Image (cartoon, rainbow, N blue to C red; front, top):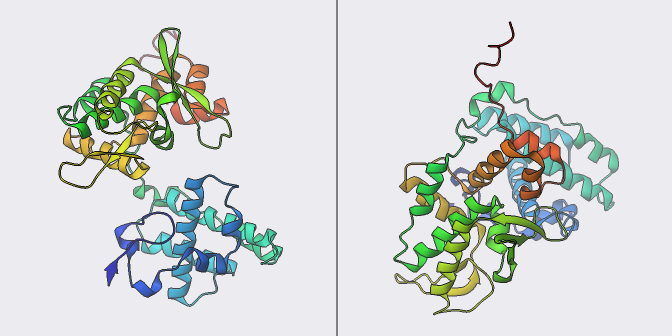
Amino acid sequence: MVSIALDVGGWLSAQECTMTATSVQSLSELAGHFPGLLDLAGRVNARTLTEYRRDIHLYLSFCRREGRDAREPQSLRAWRADMADQTSLSPNTINRRLAAVKRVVRATALLGDLPMDVAHGFSLVESVQVAPLRARLRTDIRTPLEPDQVRKLIDAPDTETLSGLRDRALIATFAGSGCRISEVVAFRVNDILASQGAWLLRVLGKGQSTPRLAPLNRVARSAIHAWLTERSRYVDVQAVFTAFSPSPNGRPLARAITSKTAWRAVRKYAEQVGLPHVKPHSFRRFVGTRLAAKDLRSAQLALGHKRLETTVSHYVLDELEAGLTEDLF
């Protein structure tokens, strides 16, 4: 038995990656079962497509192991039961995986490779309920960051090193913009804009076809400037956050970092300062909740939400204020 990476555009958990080499399926093999997977390219964003590929692989692996026909709705029901009974997956993860299979099955039916009544049967497979599996929900997933914790995280990297300069700029950008990880790793030097004595970032957000503007505070802008100034001695490229060569004294490379690299950097310093629950999206939540407390519309624009309801549901803190009933009588 060996631990391996799947040829489906991403990494799975250690448990799911532990399988025999013969069980790994290429993308063409996945599409052989559900051609709709390929048809979704260009219709959903790259991250979503990567997740679909991963989830289809897991579903097919289950069906193969249990001797089930993956193109039958009852097999999806059996997978749901298996995930609920035999794993410690959260209900949200289970439901996301079920939704991914349903979407790919529908795309396959629209191509004419699967009867529409079969796709309808898949759509009728119910999600798991959160309440019975609530013990599996992470209790720290929405633990809010405080300003002093953010400052501690920004100051954690060793700025005497080039990698430390980059990582400080990276963390400061997360905390000073509220941008998603995909937006942060992709923006370029000419996407930093001056406006009325302040700074903005031009980023291409989730599900957007045209760039939007996001705020960038002075701490982040200063950290970016320090990093780019030192990096210019080695490479001159538009990508702001670039990788290093793998040698012990790695030199800056011309290629942009990946989301995985950014994730690892944040986790490294979060654990270093005793905040192991922090991940890149924690900074977006930090920015969003603080802006929403001041002005919901500003928070919506800063975060790039199409609907105000999204901002309200995810970034308005629902905490009971003490003393609300004091003046009632």
